Structures are given as structure tokens and as C-alpha cells.
Length: 103
Image 1 (cartoon, helix red, strand yellow):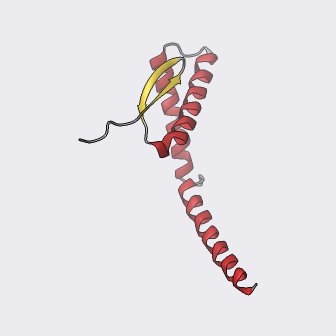
Image 2 (cartoon, helix red, strand yellow):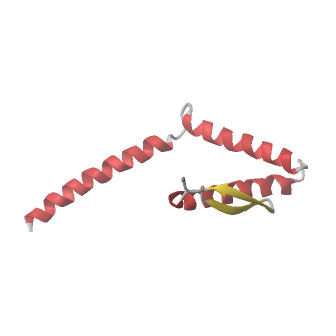
């Protein structure tokens, strides 16, 4: 019998939600929750939009725009940056390993 999915209780805009979450994803999920909650509170506090559903849609559109602007045109590609950092770390590890052999 398969294990039941693990869940995490989170709060966004004062409402509780149970979200499926593996152990290794917990920290990333909590960061995402904090980000979304903050954005939703900003939109709600502006007073220009009423209703939780409308606030959620506006925040979803804003976050989607942020994401797409980092991937398109002259935007910053986070995935490419992570790959470059990993490559640099590998080269540093290799160079340091050769230095260890000298002593």
C-alpha cells in the first residue's frame, strides 16, 4: 500500500490550507507561502481590489508577469545562473582537490 502524501498546514491571507509537501520541499514551500501571503496582503491593503478571489487572481497575474519577465528578452534567467554557479563550484572543487595533493 502506498504511503499517504505528506501535508503541511499553511496560512495565506488568514485562511488555512493543507498542501501536499515532501520533506525535502518543505523550506521551499514555506518560502513560496510567505511570498504569496505577502503579495496578497499588499494587494488587499491597497484597498483597490476587494474579495479574496479577486486578490488571488491579481497576485497570480503579478507573479506570472514577474516570472515571465525573468525568462524573456533581456530578463535574468535564474536557471541559467544556477547552472553557471554549479559549473564554477565544480571547477573550484577540482582546483582545490589538486592543491590538497601538493601538501
